Length: 80
Image 1 (cartoon, rainbow, N blue to C red):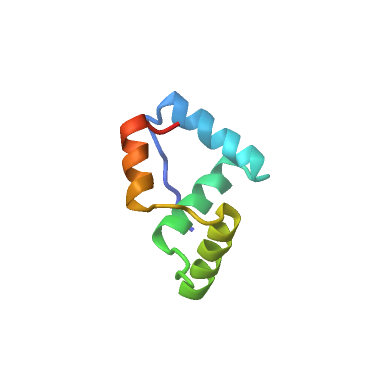
Image 2: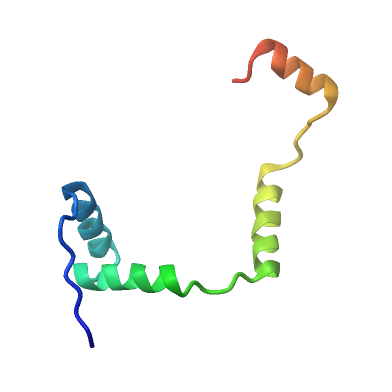
């Protein structure tokens, strides 16, 4: 298996990767490999699963009143 050396990694990025590796119970090398693998071979999106997640989120939000009168009132009074 080929090796790659990374040089010049900014300290904040290094800290963030180490922290993420710890949270994911991986070594720093394992975290970097996992992220690189995910970035070049992403899993295909399941459109139905995505729509189901969106519908569930919208159900939690409940109905949203976007009538012209409501929008005008929000614009004139400022949103919270």
